[in-house]
Structures are given as structure tokens and as C-alpha cells.
Length: 481
Image (cartoon, rainbow, N blue to C red; front, side, top):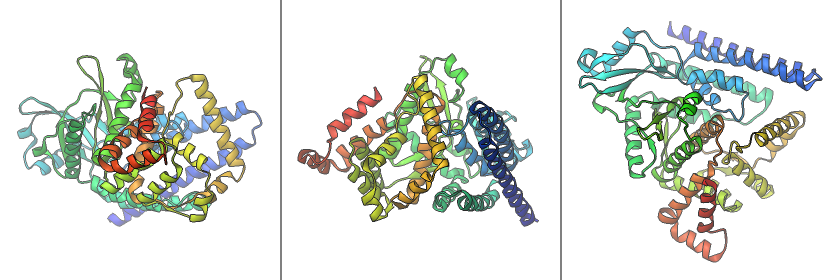
């Protein structure tokens, strides 16, 4: 009977999302008939509230891998209306939980002991529940406070089914609305998601992150693991007191410097990508806590190392070169570095590409999400909305798509793009003035100069072929200030 339930789930999912899509299309048509901008704003505010709740409730009912999609969307305060960000944020740690007998069976099946032999007490009420697992507080027999992460039942069976429906939805959206083919992105996501279901992989990644952050003196914490209590569907780690990074009431109460906090998080990410080679692929707000130290200093705590990506040396070198060339305005070098990463370019379109446009687009993607000035931020928001409106009313999107010199994206870079998107969205959510490119540039230059390509960079600097390492360093330092 499992195949019948699976077919029913797929049909329900496809029809539900299709209904929402048609409703949004109808709203767009109705809004176009309204003459007053004030009336249009009021109309969209009501429509966004309604559809945000509808989408969130649908995802909470479906659970499974749709939660991952919702979590990503919930971080894009720089792209989505606030109603969507607010409603979808519930998916980060407020999903339905399992009955305690099911939790007990999973725990005892994984560790091979009764719960009473391992825990002096165990809180039956989950403190958080997200896409693939829920989290409970407990105390070990020696009194140590810990966190127990238990995988939701049936989540493995839902993966293939949900991705199949997602492919169908993307196929029809592409044909109805246009847009890029992201089949390779789904393939890469599915490949990494399968690994995420074995918590033993997460335990290895978690410990590697602990060791790497210690070596690099990174100012972001990763909780200690109790390896003898970890298994395929369970993880046990030391409890880190703190609150979710988007809890703005507590951020303000503790007077947390969000710019400094984001600088530490972005530097940790830059270190992971450029130096260690393994980076966290799912840094949504539910996976980033803020712990207030005894001296009052705020420290980010990075959780959930199930979804990661590991890069070999050639890929790390190529990414360092992309960031370096971006900082030093070396367009040709950046395209070459993209090719080293596995991007394929249309030769004719590459020759016709506007270097300044490409460079500014890349710099915008990795620069400030906010200016720190409310009036300027409002002007930027209005400008972006006007730009999107103009693009909708013309063939701009089609022209841009046709002019795009990239023929195919390497699968290895897809998770990196998602991670950058999550961190960039978080910067917007916290409303802090911080340039994401600054720590990326500093780490990239540091590694190219000292480990990867010191002789090549020295020659390029001496020959005057491009802006040198020293100036790239100076620019990075100025951005971080």
C-alpha cells in the first residue's frame, strides 16, 4: 500500500502548489487593473499575507524535503516580501514532532541501551523541530546537560517522491514563465541530501569543523559531540545555551553588535571555503545560535553539519582566484577562474559580454545588503522594485537570458551558491552594514599568496599585469572597517 500513499502524496503536492501558482498569476492580473499605487500596495500586502500563510501551512503539512525549500526562502529578506519571510521562518525550528514512544524506539535502537541507562532525565517535549529531525534536551548520567537530535521517521522515503514532484513543478514553471534549467542543481542537492540522512556522516563533519575552527582560531563555536552515543539516526552533543540569531528582541536586549557577529560568521565561512575545503551547506537561522559569554561578548554557534561540501585543492584555488579577481577588477582572470571551476561558456557571448556589467553584478551579489542609512535603503528598495517592474513589462529578462555567456554550471558550485544566498539573506534580516566580500577577499589573497600560487601572483604583480596582492589586501581591510 506504500505506493498508493506515495502517489497520493505526489498528486496532493502537485495540485496544491499548482493552485497557489494560479492564484498568484490571477493576483498579478488583478493588480495590473488597479490605477492607484496605494491601492496596489494594499492589495499586494493582503495577498502576500494570505499566500504566505497558505504556503507555510502546506509545507508544514507535507513536511519532508519541502521544509528545506521553505527554509531557504525564509532567509531571503532581500528578495521576498516580509510576510513570506515571517511565515516561512516557522519552518526553521517549529515543525510538528513525533510521539514519544517513536522517539524512544529510535534512540534505544540506535544506542543499544535503554534510555534510563544513558540519561538521568530526558525532556519529552522537543525544543525544536525542522526538516529531518527534532531536538530534545536531556542530562547524561554524570549530570552533563546535552542535546539529543533524533531523525523524523519516514523522512528517507519522502526524499525521492518530493524531488520528483519538484522536478515536475520546475518543468512546468520553466515552460510557462521561462527561466533557467536547474535540473543539475536538483541532482546535486539530492546527492548531498542522501548523505545528510546518515547522522554518522554529520558526526564526522561536525568533528572536522571543531578541529578546523580550533586550528584557524575562528571566533565561531561548534558544540562538543559524544561520539559513543551517535548513530545513523541520532546525535548527542553538549548543550550550548543561546538563542536563534534572528531573535531580534534578545539581540537588542543583550546589545549584540550584529555587524561584528556577521563579520565573524562570514570569516568562518571564508575560512571553510578557502582554507579547510569543507563548508556548512545549510546555514539558515535555525542552525545559527547566539551565545552570550560571561564577559558579555556574543558568539555565534553553528549547528547541524549534515549538509556540507568538500572541495579539493584545484577547486579551492579556482574559487580563491575568482574572489581575488573580483576584488582586483580582473575580468579576464575571473572568467578563466570560472572555467577552472568547471563553468562552460559560449565563446561568442563571452567575447561580447560587458566586463563592467558582469563585474558590478558579482560585486553587488557579495557586497552590502544594507547601507546602514534608512533613507538610502528605502531608495534602493524602490529602485529594485522599479527595475523588476520594468523587466516584467519588457523583454529584458529574455534579452539577459539570451546574452548569458554561461552554458552550464558545475554541480560542485551549486551548494556554494545556496550557502552564499543564505548568509546574504541573513545579513539583510539582521539589518547590519557589512560587506560579505571583505573576509572572502582577505582569506583568498592570504591563501593564494602563502599556499596556493605565491610565485604566480608575485610575477603578475611585478609585471604589472593586474592589481597586486598588496592592493587587494588593502581593499579588503578597508571594507572590513
